[in-house]
Image (cartoon, rainbow, N blue to C red):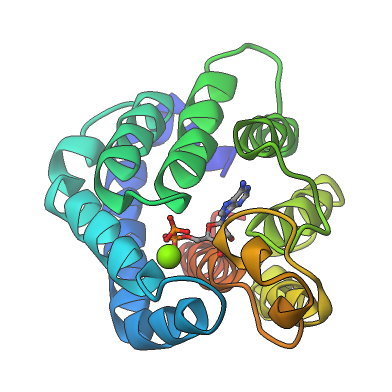
Length: 211
Ligand code: ADP
Ligand code: MG
């Protein structure tokens, strides 16, 4: 991630960004029904549809985004996600990318620090914490792994485990919290989409050999 944001690499970066967006769109499209099923169990059943709409909007703008400097593209992508995912997840995914873009524009911050600050901003936006059974239960451990410089290939194999940990949690935020104890025993849909997207980005990083 740090390498691809360096200016000398603009052409490779643009091509890579386009591929990542397509891969994320395809991954979400493939898993749309599973994400809806997870949300049907503890929410209102629309998470897969919301995510597909967001990723399709992102994919339709991939050429414009790929032509931008990386930090600017993250900010623009965050805005697209806020406007198109909708629901509770849209503003949270949007905040993540917007804050990554803002953080990358600050001199002297390395990507793991940028990501950590962005995750904190998502938590503030959702007034939620790790352990509440949300996508933050994937973002926080992911941030810790980035700080430890875990190789993306290894990380791709680990993130689903973070989403699995939400199965035994009781939801304290979002629609699932209305179920109280009955939310236990189901994977959080936002954690599932977040793990899927993180694994997809990690695989693309590995394939591009940029990590
Ligand atoms: P909605 O709940 O409005 O239908 P989605 O189904 O698209 O929206 O997204 C639900 C997901 O959003 C949840 O599974 C959870 O991961 C995440 N989420 C909901 N509320 C919060 C919150 N306050 N903080 C963090 N994540 C949240
Ligand atoms: Mg929902």
